[in-house]
Image (cartoon, rainbow, N blue to C red):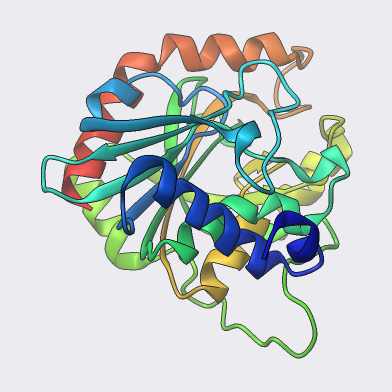
Length: 271
């Protein structure tokens, strides 16, 4: 089925993208997928032996990232443990208006290639003053405030252990300094107001951002194990007097690039 016929069936479109990746790279499947959010692109050359480098915009169902600094490549690497990993250096955000199916298309494409373990990363505003910009934080749970879901019909998915405890324990074994918290996805693209940040804190949130939760729901539907890590790129609105700026997000990622590269390398080697 081509993209025209698959456009109304997100799973068929994901299968088409998976077949395109397989035919373009020679792989028959993959074990691990990583989605690298704001600040996380550094160190991809340390993840393993490069097998392929594709332009996401040329794959069925994908498009070029809408925001500077979000990348736009699909890297295929063989890890030190001999596993095949897909590395998405860009994602579609809900605020782009392309629909939830487009937001989770990368996850569903990975699932169509047999991926069983997913690492989701993002840049986030931090609500904990103990986490300065440049601090990576494990996602222990999430709150989806987008009002949307990638699920349709009577698709009842248990979200109790979405963020796989085993993988979080593995990550803490690699870096014992990692804290964990609850990630709150807002729809964006505007940054949160101080009142919205206070609301997120009352609800139990520790991190705020504009991605990740919808992808996690789709990954849970696909039966994947999921590990999530937020890079605190700035204090959330109202935590300090500083204004919010996307350039600050990119700068925090650059400043933390060495630590993130080592963390990703060691995690991928252990997954």
